[in-house]
Length: 330
Image (cartoon, rainbow, N blue to C red; front, top):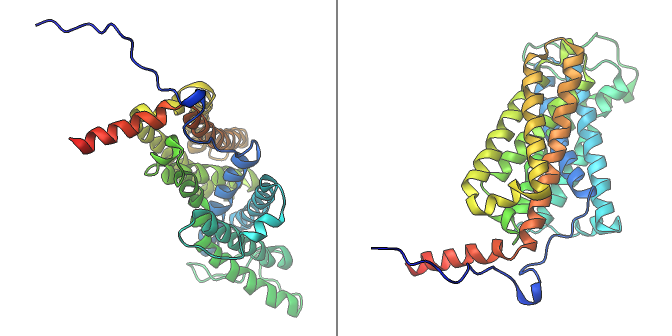
């Protein structure tokens, strides 16, 4: 039995008057991708600072504290710039709406910014870090007498804020994945399972890279481990996401988004391998840190570009809808 040959070409999915079915996201570059990068880096840096402080890696903890505070402050500034008027960010804090990722995310970012800034009070006002007992019962750093009452007050307050930022840190690193997935943009919404892992891995790689670059090599071992693990998680999550999405994964593989994602994958994998073998080599450490930072940024730019491309092309909205209708009818 011969198969009939189609004489009519496959219909193209176009919208009315050539307009997209849904509105594309209006987030701008470089504000939003950089904000996503800084928020993730800040969140994981807070977690790293807590673990380093509790295990006696006080030099690394100090670097991670600074990275967390700088990332949160810079990210909030970029978000305010994206909103057009800074007071709009304050307006989002007027209410707390648990069903809104934007509302919850605004409060998470505000808490992370305040706590990470307060966590600086200990090391930056007290000289050598110390005061928070770690696993061995010691108080890291040389034991110098407190420089007055202010010194004695600021150090425990800074350490308390640091411990609290260990709670807001993981939320800050991953809430942006929920924020983009909770939209009608096909390439984001359908990737809701993998995006949190992808964002978390990218944030780990970024935070590990910053702490590797800002900490003496002899003290940066845990940061290298975080960077390697982050690179592995990001790479695996990205591959799983594109394979599971199938047809809807095309925006991540084609056009500008495809170039960005391939570049990110190469930089992240290369940076992770270099971090694993860098040891005490300053040159390899710098190359690894720069590659991981660039890879994390490319990932955020690529994800936003893929979302924009999927919103502009009607087929990524129409085809999945028709498939779901057929599946429901069957």
